[in-house]
Image (tube, rainbow, N blue to C red):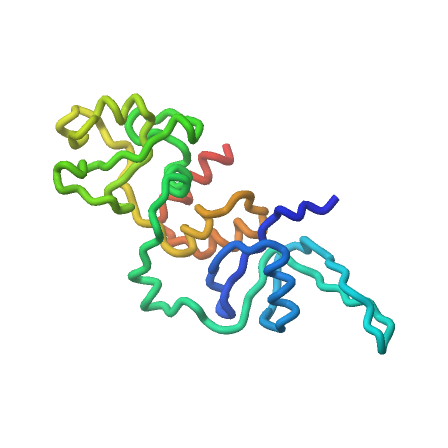
Length: 199
């Protein structure tokens, strides 16, 4: 049975990951002849209506990765890209680990901690926030890790556009993951965190 909830990874013509789209949006892009090429596994075979003249029925095959015409993210703009900060993506960036005690938690038991607290002129930015369990966050309170006598296990980082596309995903297929990983910086902490999740 076909899983119509599986998202399609859309890229620009240069292969830069842009976003996740549903099968209806993918079919629309094929119909509007906006798809430059596709790769990955075949996800959907969508049957349309029957042509009155030819008597043939239209069929659109949708792959797991589709590249669309045009380049939507110039390389200079990518350097200064700052994705919107939200808890779901933050917790996924930090592999659902508390960056203080190192334990794994369900999303409902996690919170956003400001390394330099807002009350001490800290900012609500990717580079100043980490995932913390509620117990550690309450213990740290409005103090820096040093002031609270706590050790920060990893340095927070701002995801690149490709990393953020991954962080926004619900369910990533193996071919989509391989494609995304090729666009992560070599020094990205996500490589190590994804490897930990696999083991």
